[in-house]
Length: 259
Image (cartoon, rainbow, N blue to C red):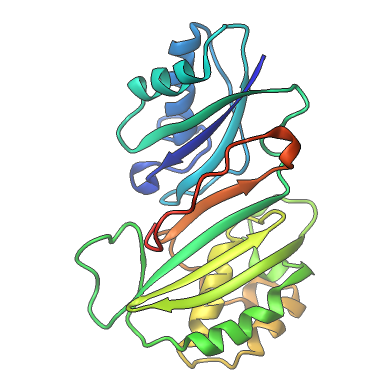
């Protein structure tokens, strides 16, 4: 049978999601835990691979197994073997038609910027620090240029292996909560470093170095070398993955803004 899992993790001490020899990855930790529960080797498929230092509260994975376990057993069994910075939140048996990656209709990321002259003494791994005052209004004006279906070649990593650079951004909101500036972005899918490169461009605009129209200029250039600095992975969290309601997957409430 096929089982879907909701997973969350603090990416600070992981070298990203994907298996890499000799490094600590989220995929390795989860597969080792599930293999012990299933009593056979387990390989998982994820909705989206996250980079080193990137967190997740709404990651979704699936795996196939011949072992009969209850949903509760998958959750509590896996968590008993997982490290304290990674956990399974829910489990659900799904049809073979479900695919964690290809069945997803949208991904929701949040990028949190700690905007103060003095660096943060707490939550340092959960926020990106910008010491220059950021103008949220100009950042939001710039963000509007990126909504819709576009070729995001200028906003992806040079090493990105995606064959098609076109992605559809459904929502890109910028808001301030005291000393926190929060970017919420929802798209059908993302390219490698796409969110971090968008954050880098918006922070440059918010600091007054470029006008809001620069976000569109970068987009239309389709040239990553013109896109400015890639923002740090700190502060980036995969919040949620959307699927058709027909699969009946849990939809958990979103946590406070710092997460």
